[in-house]
Length: 501
Image 1 (cartoon, rainbow, N blue to C red):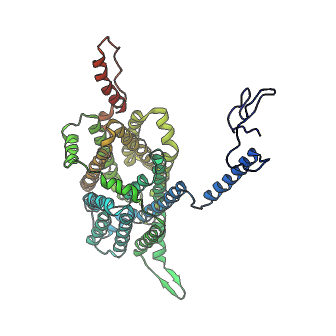
Image 2: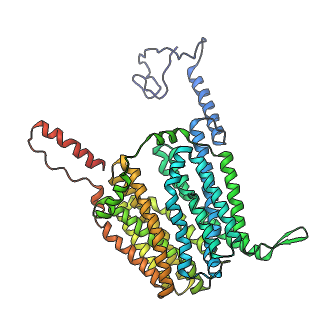
């Protein structure tokens, strides 16, 4: 019996065939063919049909293999991220209207914004160690529980102190985005990590689109009342907060029921010990040596993010004063910006990086972000305002991912996590301080000054990234001189290190 391996050329012919008249040495049949007259090609076809049925079962949701288990975990994470961000954006767009109704001015309201960032900045290291010790799943459940409590406090808040308590509780809970990103890193292979993080970003931005609409709708419905039999339940201002809390509790139950812990990676992370004091050294290096490539990229990220957050913190106040936007209509503006963010990150970012490269695209994003901040207070109508607002998600989508990607390439792989954490630390500091400055300018300067100040800060980061291409390209190798072999050997590691970085 002649057996020709599938996909392998027989002597003198194409794959799996033999030339007429060619002498082909017979090969023994596979071990599975034990009976006389067995046709191995038919057995192969039957095996392929069985594999096809197995693949269909996996795609239908049957968790049968290790890779399928990873995929199902990612689906749960994406759903959790979407619902969590949806609940958050039910409340956040309404916060300035609740605060001003209780007597807050611009600076006091931006203190509410900064209170959340400050609480998260302080608690993040504690929750990071908690996550390494007890796992991602308990940390995520705690963060979701803290968010639910904060939404209930927000719903029944009748004073500014209660609003501050609401924001501090949610920030001290550690936030969920960082935990979800760590969960993605734990649950995926390095080659699939960028795609999985892209799915997570798309899910959170979809939540940004839906949440504000639900918040404004809940507020309108709460004022009208909900008919329950013969009783009309009027929740009024409490409706958005209670809806967000209910969604958060449902999300918490969903995560508790379906999300599984990634124990293996957590134990491995626990075994890694950072040199004591190394984080402080890196932070000091960014401040004392701002000319270094990593320091420049961290400062671009922190200053740009802080300016963007400062302006967005007073955006609702601007819309209310200039265009008469209310708590019932603010959701449409946030949903529009969220939709533009999805389009920018899901459809435009990848092709733009391929065409322009990360250094040039980051500068394009910086220009778009600064231009948007300049034009917003100059917009005389809603259509022109929509065009100006569209520049913000385009600018942030082109700037921050490219800067982060470049940072990961200019530092060694063994310190990548350390520098990424330092970048987030500087970003957290600017998210606390810059909104306070925007609030002061809102109270004591012209209506456009906070926006133009933010644009100036963003534009200033262009000078930090003018020669970013040189960070990513190794120096050209000089012509090889006639030198002894030992010198060549000593020069080789340096060249390899330059190419790697």
